Image 1: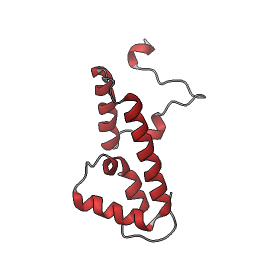
Image 2: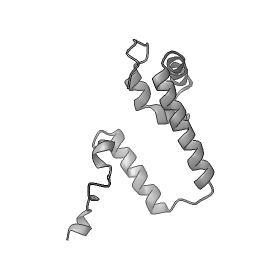
Image 3: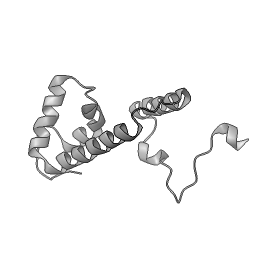
Length: 108
């Protein structure tokens, strides 16, 4: 997604790090760059607003639930693999028309 206009911070960089921005997991200087970008780029601002709304909805609906330890470990492991470039999030997503990937134990 891009508005087609040149920006000091590229749309792809903003979208690649959107969750870090939402979770305030980046330095203040980086946050400021993103805020400036959102002021200039309505498509990225719209995406930010959508993701922020989803995050608030999940927190409201599931915020008091305890996350099972094994689920948390699996999610964090997947995030680490994606950040390291070993996985592409879209390639591992399970869609209704594609079967769930089998683990080595399930294949035996």
